[in-house]
Length: 325
Image 1: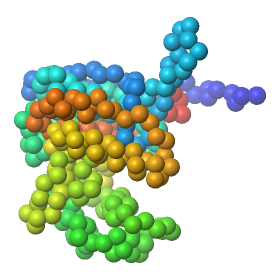
Image 2 (image 1 turned 60 degrees about the vertical axis):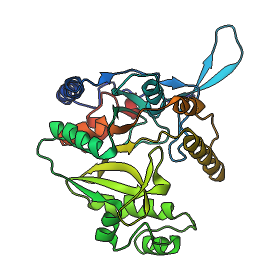
Image 3 (image 1 turned 30 degrees about the horizontal axis):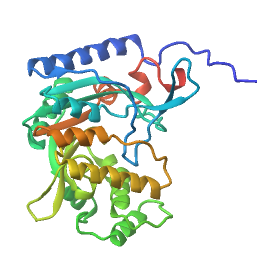
């Protein structure tokens, strides 16, 4: 016998919060209209899934009427791949404001269905995009102070260690001194990520824009040498009071390197015994035609609204959270 449905029909956000949310969304659209950045609306269902081993796609089955064959499709975790195909097709600078989906994430800061703002600026590098991200965020949070700091200096200031040159053994030893981590791992990023998420991020106050991440964390960003000669990713993340708000890249345009990274993601998925799903080779084909020089960023809109409204739970700023969907 199945459990009775939840009888709580009411929205999880107050109507006043939803009115303020609507005003913020309207302001975001005005921000891009003033800059002549075109809004696009790409598909939510895709034949391919995200390759990132740390993001899990939600699968949906499509059954053509009259057919007995199910075709697996995937709810988008980000509109990035589709938007880059539009960039190659000549769309110019574009943005998208809409729903994305990630499996396995429910908490005060996570809902499996959430609103993402993603945009790409032709001719921008990551420094110029940082300026625009800060301008957008300050239009919603006018009293916020935002500072910039390198990933290296962040670790040196908080933990007195250079994350770019420290060995896995040094990083794991430091991590275990503060965090219960009863496992072995030779990947320094495992320990960097734990140190970042458990020790550094909770200590961040006001707005902090972090740049110069390890090259191994480049994802879809380019890699360059910093002032010390170390290879770093040309990407940044914006945190507000320890809450990750935005993640931006000076975008990779090399099709062969993109294909290599997608294959590496699949190999890591296999090592971690994660589901192996079709990856977006149409992105590689698009890059072969030529992605314009650009920078792009994804920003969590629900989290931005949380900060603007002083909310402590994402359920307070979306109409119906996961338990009432």
